[in-house]
Image (cartoon, rainbow, N blue to C red; front, side, top):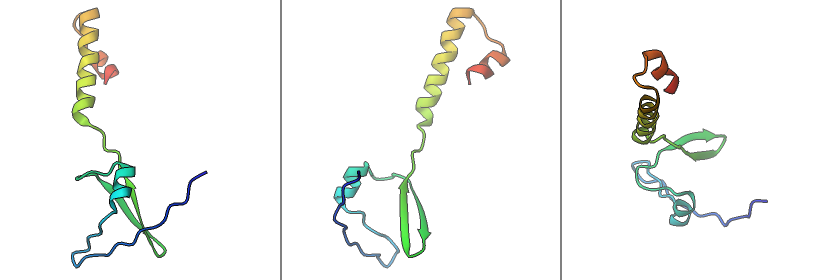
Length: 85
């Protein structure tokens, strides 16, 4: 069961900015440039951390798979590369 946490109070700046308290940023792993989905629901503002994929990491993994298949089977056709992707 989720443990109740004491709420914090923050203020909206003149620019519409809100500071997320440090303990919450730390708990959720929010670092500078972390993307958040923001939406309003009734009288609440809800923020949800977005998990943005690391495209460079995904590309490296894809190339590793292609290189592995080339090493094992030789040259690949476009269709075979599409299968890996």
